[in-house]
Image 1 (cartoon, rainbow, N blue to C red):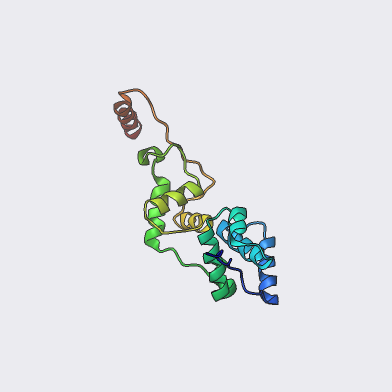
Image 2 (image 1 turned 90 degrees about the horizontal axis):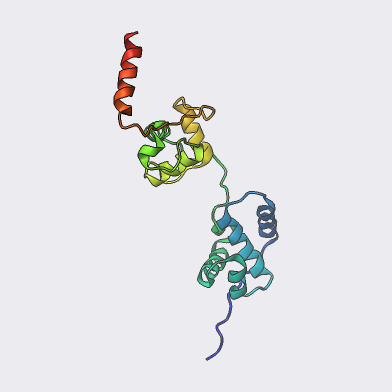
Amino acid sequence: MGRKASVFVRELTAVEKQKITSIKRKRIIHCSLRQSVDIVLLSSEGWEVKLIAHRVGLDQSNVNTWIKGFNKGGIDALGDIPKPGKGKEITKDIKLKIATIALSDPKQLRKPFTSWTVETIRQEAINSGVIATTSWEATRKALKNCGITTQRSCTWKESKDPDYESKKKHHRALHESA
């Protein structure tokens, strides 16, 4: 039984080479895009799937999928390539849910921190099913739209005193009656 032939990308066009090189030079790109670009470049240089998989840290079947996808769909098959135009608008309802997260006490949501950052709010919105995916910037804009700015830090202090709640209520009542 003979060895299975390795899969390679088709010959790259001049435009594809230019676009891939341009993507590769960017300082900040999504890791899956970097991997797919590396796979295409290494395959175009004659590297076998097994060696590419080892180099980029993926399974050989994933490398084969990327190569076959590129051979079929070209640059667009690499995925995660920024598309021109405005992204999806976050609805008012979702913005309010994101704001609710930001205004909540992280400890009540069993978080290991006492103040929110835009990134932790974004993560919580995704993890709790408020939104499927969103960027840091879109989260910041949603908060700003609801009147929440990232300059102010809100922290929640906790007391170990068992009578803390009753003392707090009494203290508030004194301030309100004054």
